[in-house]
Image (cartoon, rainbow, N blue to C red; front, top):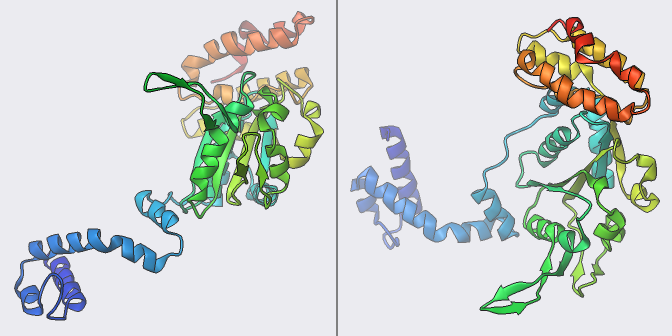
Length: 347
């Protein structure tokens, strides 16, 4: 340690413990002590009195401790966010205003439009530099109210089978968020794959009335903390937004994501690849599909080894998808077979 740091620590001790009745050092002892002894003593003092310092500077002890234990998230600016996902800042500002007003939103679009990636980046921006956090949960057809809110689950306790009422993923998330001061984000991936009316239960009411508290089916009262934001992702090739329950649609804002060729272009420019030929083929292909809910997105092709991977991607991911979509018009698929398009890619 430098002499300057040692001197500063010595001065700090003199300032803190100038009284001869100091708990640790007397004034003359401080002036004559080695810097190592002073550091060891200061560390011990810090451990002993840190809880009192927290109480002195904060009315909420748990969030203060959380900020100390969990270092702040790195600063993630709106400009960083825009560069990462390839959207203009004005669009992102609109998204953020909507999410903060509505508190929950669904990103929807065709396969490969980067919904999950964008949701994670959006959560990172919403959290900012505070003590918030984000978690991701994947919905599926077997996902239930008991998994998400709360339910009775069999457990073995000391050899005896018991059936305690246990919190689900969302209640655990809310309990954790209550101890934080800043925004906490729950990402629900593939939100439309579950029976939402069944999974959400009483949550349908609380999503709209965030300032209310209601009893759950298990008997205990519950409310959603005000610092929680919910972001869902929805693949429109699985289920159109028009088929979503109207009560649920009213409680969520919906943000549409379309195939963004500029992201594909900039991603490969940084790696020295020219993908204009690929973009031209994708534009023709999506015009042939002629349905925004089933367009081919660009995330299929966001690979660092595009030259080596492109044939496998096209033959084993794109062609099967097209065969399923044009199952009764296979002649439309033929013009987009690998052997037909490979010489037009210019990769």
